[in-house]
Length: 159
Image (cartoon, rainbow, N blue to C red; front, side):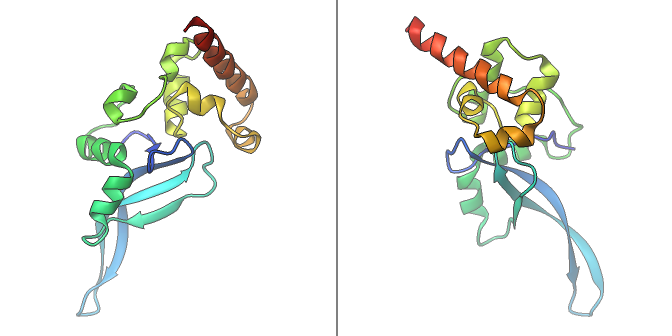
């Protein structure tokens, strides 16, 4: 089972996606029904789990979907069929640009895994979250954004 990881789509910090195996009911020519498993790209606004769009990977759209979310496809391909792992791959390995949340030294491993499950991988993403998205993340979210903003400000002064 794949870890609940979300990755940037089209290079955006705000829209994230993941590829998941999806069960699809199909009716065969002889009218019998069966279920097939196909990968699908799920997409959402980072930090908002309420609205998720869904596109099944088919021959005609596979190349385009992979191009839109290459880190998500690479993660899907590398981990399909493996047991769930709560490891935290480096963002550079995933093709994500920015400052890794781990560099802040402000969150434990469990919180970092949770952020990544929300599609938030970088300090810049966390600092840029809107108030409405923070509301979806729950208690403590405004403080997390403030810590990220302060971290970026102190890093800018150091350079």
